[in-house]
Image 1: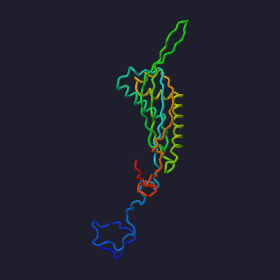
Image 2: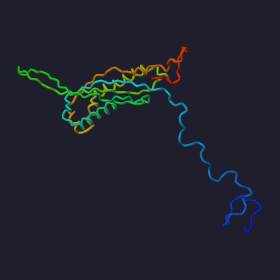
Image 3: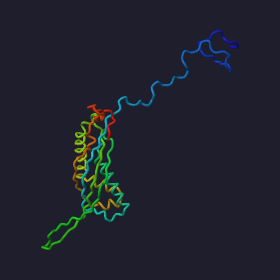
Image 4: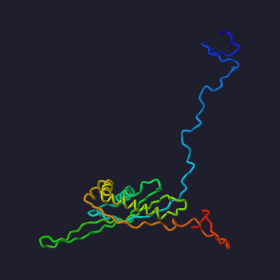
Length: 235
């Protein structure tokens, strides 16, 4: 049309003007032409109930005896690689795969090369046979989340972890996966352990005494005859 109509038409014009009108529409639409932003963000909100249960350190370890394994020929760098490979293998095979485990770290305490002598009689002649044994002393420190807020179940948690860790390591020793995982450290170590066999002994589980202490401590104010539990206990 050559002139504007007195009221908005029901349908859009098939021939819109090239320029906008000088005044706003007398009948705007009831909703915007573009959809509003979503009211629900795509990322989930943080949990309303975070896990505030404290963690306790659980210490266990033991001794591994590797027969037919002589590391005396390794240089300093190769010995470091061997030690790091041992720590990684023991963590991989022994650390529990559980959501209640905060951390699990292995430390090699010592590597002792020993020689075991055996006497065999062959054709009535005495002959001494020697085999090299590598004795590895290690320690695993596991930080586990307590089931109760006051960690009163610390010893129970430690005992369960001990059974799990020692059971997994026994299986790894019996199945040979402990040696094969260690051989994957490097080609030199793989050759060195080609004929190695392994056995293990486990030490008792230890929970540091501070982990078993209650949150309560004496109120040092003279004459108070009371205890406090305000997370300000002196250590």
